[in-house]
Length: 186
Image (cartoon, rainbow, N blue to C red; front, side):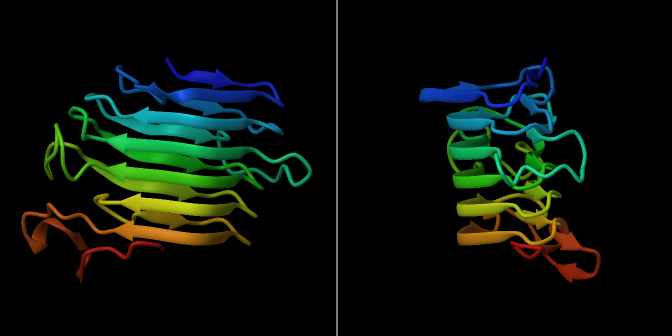
């Protein structure tokens, strides 16, 4: 089951890069739309059974402001494949407003174990639906669709690094309607 974070002002430090691995196709961590959550030093590792989302911040897009006490993510990493077969439709889903991310590495494995276009399936690395979200050091790589899908308003990104997938078997396998492939950041 997902690790639920429902109360405000909680610190979740993953000392030594603690790893969360959902094995039943569930969300690994679900954070309610509350103030002051600090998540740091965690690795979200996708399990073999597909998870729709690995880390979910807020259940759905809301109008709640967290400007005075935002949710913060520091040194948080996501891996879909690489250690073993892993599948996750979206690694990160940000529905809350005023979230601040600092050094997020969101990776669909391109080397290691459990790697292949039809093996470690994904869609997006990160989807941002919340408004006024800020990312410092956002690294998103090798997903099957847009690496980053940003729907929220007034967001900011300082330093973005991205790589398209390397293991696309042919152009027909990576089409956006009639367009060849997907942009990294939409």
